Image (cartoon, rainbow, N blue to C red; front, side, top):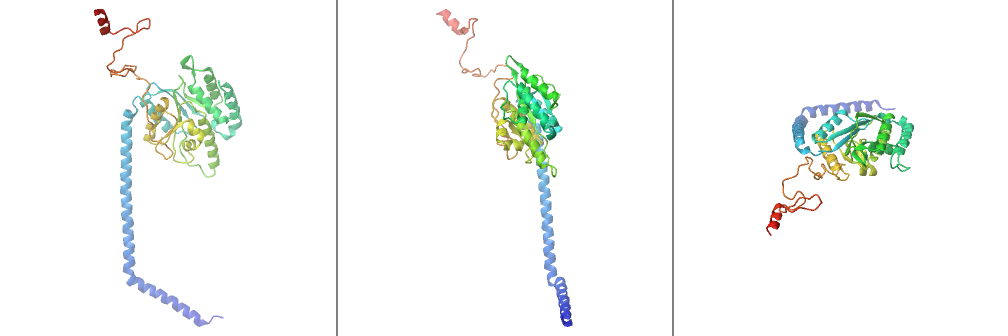
Length: 361
């Protein structure tokens, strides 16, 4: 049994501790603790103000950069896509405002929109897998060169869509092959794509617009990953068709990031990230122009997955205006060399000076 005196001693000890704490807090420690707390609060206040000023400066600098890029875009893009036919393909979930911004920049670069289609949700809907596979078989049979037997159905459909947008009749560069027309009609009839603007002539380059960036909802990560895998297969089908995928690369679930991470897809199409900002929107037409001029597949933009910000844009194969340059040597001869004209029989006639000299002699 605990003695009553033990309780008395314990209570006295507690009250003594409280008394000592009160005395110290109100006396010797009061000043130093208060000063320390005041100093810490003042430091935090100063840091917060510095961060606010820094944030405002960064926002102002970003606004200035956006304004500069927007103002410089007409000069940067001038005639980059002159005499180049561009077909646009929206993947399911592409954001309308981003598509419109890209179309505006393509027009600013002198490109001609020759067709605009939108992939329907059925293209990636898991519930439509079986009928979609049947369409892929039909599309493969409609190709001039059938795909390999082990080609994934989504890749076959992507290849079919690419053919329907770009395959030219060998006898008429402004006409589609019968195969391309048949495949296009099949994709429309099966409601895998819808026509935003009818195709006019085969495209020189294809602009694929990726779905908008978003974090998968809780419990949907696997479903989103399955859709992205189907889209990557589709993009791979555009190999060799002068295609550029434009989108965002901020999240691992973004299609651009997935294409760059896939060995086959990364070698099939070029990519442009950051199309949610004006910089990416201006880069995209330049990548289309580089692709049309034979620059190999590569990846551009502002995110870490890009190999470069801009492509090295080679000169166009010929002057889009069709006018001959007055500068010496632009016709493939030296500037101080004279060249005669051809006679009807294909021989080269001498220049007037040479003819006169021959007559004198």
